[in-house]
Image (tube, rainbow, N blue to C red; front, top):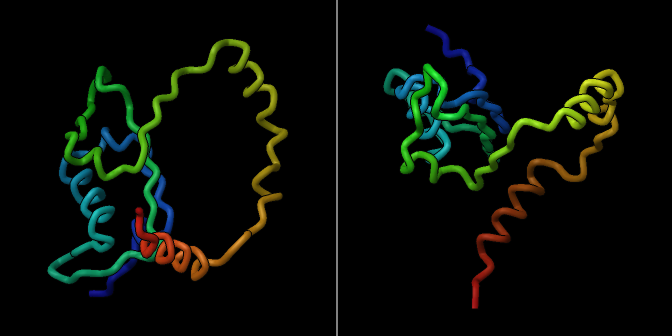
Length: 128
């Protein structure tokens, strides 16, 4: 059989509503985050470097939620809680939906190898 790389083989993975995924799926994603690799049918494959995951989760009060244990949450660098916008902010968001062209204006400021080198350099800095 032929192996087809899925979406996890990206440098940036956006995982929406991670706590709606089954515990087995959550565990697989969090293992990939920690190990930088995935194992399928006994074969281990490295994920691209750098490898980042940005995930959202729903409030634990919603039905169909599989909460992430604290031991898994610690794999994320940061945790932000964003509430629902007030009515005036929501109105501004809706009014500007068609005006978004910012992504087309984004330019690359360095290449993948530069980022990997910066990460390596920062890891070699000793704190005094």
